Length: 260
Image 1 (cartoon, rainbow, N blue to C red):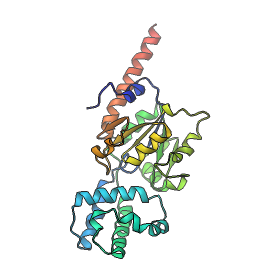
Image 2: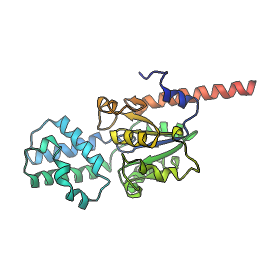
Image 3: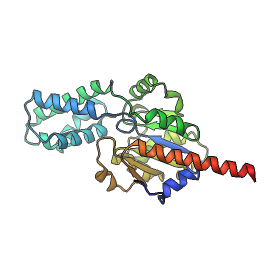
Image 4: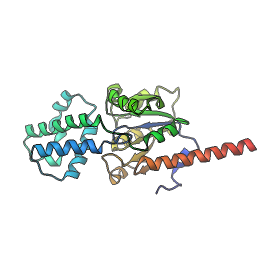
């Protein structure tokens, strides 16, 4: 249960947050099933027996960090990239590379059919009435737009930025530059970054934004807590409850002003 004394919640209720930036995979889009299917299928094929939960978490974090890079760059850095996956540490390097790239390929294919979290559409529609909404993701812009069009919510966003349209990737705060260009004199305290990975929180903090960590993707709540987001929630449902309270308070204040 989120405390009402939280500073970010108070700012939201006072209408002091103007712009909300969402990560996509794991935040708005439920990627757990596609990732789990890809990992299981490839590990079974190669007859690799490991701690599945740990492996999914490690590979999920890896996918988040590399999916914005071209395959050529991934191959060049593959020795460093793949050595942190516990499930593959005893496997010869070339086989490790084949396994990892196979998982990556299958995940990309399966994620095309991934669904938005059930509460996503309602939340975005409520937020769009009083906030500027953006997406900043390491996925490709085209992939993101396909999901949004399928759910008829693309028009709710002021801008959608995948890795192919970013000057830098998160956690580098320069990733926000295309969004900041929408404003003549942007104020960091009016921006909120919401994501399911430590890189989302780090990028928002470096940019001077408020941050929300949502434990709906690959990173568990205790891992996100280590990065000290301004608010840490289990799912977007918690955020929707906060937003509805925010709108109720705002409407009451407007009513009081009219009567006075």
